[in-house]
Length: 345
Image (cartoon, rainbow, N blue to C red; front, side, top):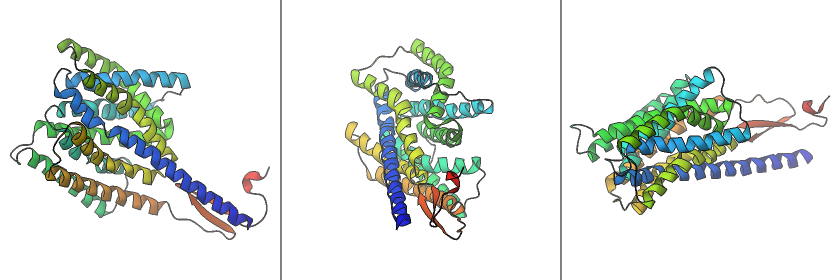
C-alpha cells in the first residue's frame, strides 16, 4: 500500500510537470507568433530600413542579455563552445532576423508565415544530420513533401514557376539559418543552459550588429510612427530575448518531445494575427498552404520523435522493481522493503 501511494504521487507530479512545460512552451510560441506581423508593421512604410530593424533589435537584445549574464554571473563558453555559439548567433541572431526583415518588405505577413511554417521540419532535418541519426524513410518523405508544399505555395503566390520572387528566396534562407541555429543551440544548451546559450549568442554577435546598425543609421536615419516603434520594441525585447526564456523553460521542464511540437501552431497563429492586426485577406490558398506545410512538418517531427522515444524506451525489468515514467526519464521505486542505494552511507 505504501509503495502504491508513492507511485501515484510520482505519476501526479509527472502530469503536473507536463502541463507546466506545455504552458511555458505555448507562451513562448505565442510570443514568437507576433514576430512576422510586427516585422511587417515596422518595414511597411519604409521609414525604418530592414537592415536597421534586423540589426538594431539584436543590439537592444544583446544589452539585455549582457545585463542578465552579468547579474547572474554565468560561466562563459570555453574553447570550441565559442565556435558553436557563433553558429547559433549566425542562425538566430543575424540570419533569421535580417533575412525576414528584408523579405517582408515585399511579401505579406501571412505569406511569410506559411513559408516559415517549414521551420519545424527543417529544424528536425538539421538535427538529424547534426546528430548523425538514421531516421526511417517516412521521415525523409514527409520532410520532402513539406518542402515541396512550401515551394509550390510560394511559387503560386508569386505568380507561377517562371521565377521565384526574391522575397521567397530570402524567406527560405531565413528558414535554413534558423534551423541550423536551433539545432546547434539545442545541443549547446545541454552544456551552457537554455537561455544562457541565446544570451551568449547575442553578446557574441553584438559587435557585428552594432556596425550594421550604425551603417543603416548613416544611410537612412530611422523614423516612424509610435506604432512602428512599438513593433520594433517588441521585436527587440520579446522576439529576440524574453520569448526565449519562456520557450526554453518549457523545453527544460518537458517532456521535451511534447513541448517541441507546440511550435507547429506558430504559423497558424501568425496568419491569424496578420488577418486581425494588418487586415490581410485570409484567402483559401493561404489557409490550405499553411495547413499542408504544418501537417507535413508535424508528421516529420512526430516520426523522428517516435523513433527517438523507441530507442530510449528499452527498460530492463529487474525483480522487485517498478518503473514509473516521469517526464523524459524513468524513475524506479523499489517495491521491497529496505533503504535505497542512495540512502546508504
